[in-house]
Figure 1: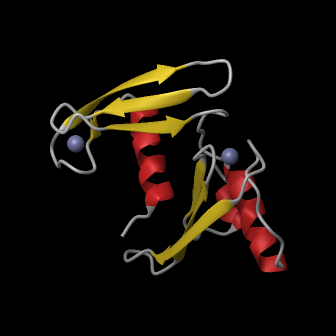
Figure 2: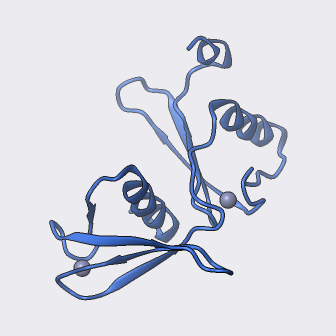
Length: 132
Ligand SMILES: [Zn+2]
Ligand SMILES: [Zn+2]
């Protein structure tokens, strides 16, 4: 079950990618979204036409996907036992790990608890990953 950070990450990701953002409470209902820039706190507001509820997602800094090299750096930190912080805003990162049912390899997803930037590592070695 996705937690709040993961849910907000996926909502922000859908919003920035221009895809329809489905309401987490009302399956199949598409929320309307807008981005507000304010002096202190840029944010996305998503509003559900069915329940009229709205979700505010802080976006300063704005969400982005971490580069592959950055994600590999996170993994190296885990191996060394070092803490991982978001490259964008220096906040804590949440780590999800799961096994890919197709490849049998571990997958890691890193999500910043503050700006909701994210990155996924899908079990390829650094050498393989370097070939783009
Ligand atoms: Zn709703
Ligand atoms: Zn961040």
